[in-house]
Figure 1 (cartoon, rainbow, N blue to C red):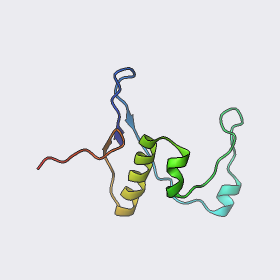
Figure 2 (figure 1 turned 45 degrees about the vertical axis):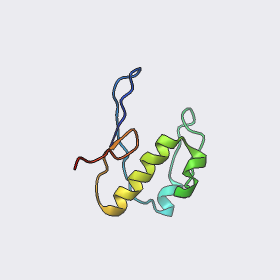
Figure 3 (figure 1 turned 180 degrees about the vertical axis):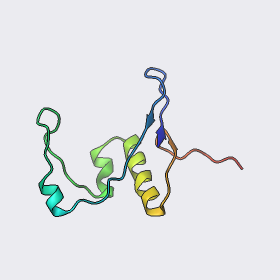
Figure 4 (figure 1 turned 90 degrees about the vertical axis):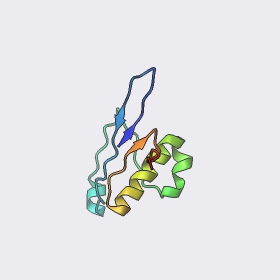
Length: 85
């Protein structure tokens, strides 16, 4: 979950969901709406900086780490907030 306040657009709460892994057969059955999508691809996490903006790189990377640790991540602008001592 990522809280992204923006004075021009109001506050947003953005979610990144882990849909699991697709089988080869499930990948073959993916249908795209031509008026919305040209295609899809799978990429290594190391390629993210070349594919999207920094804020999304942080959000996706945090999601991958949260999945690996079995937790839900809370972010503010794509970054974990400082914890109070």
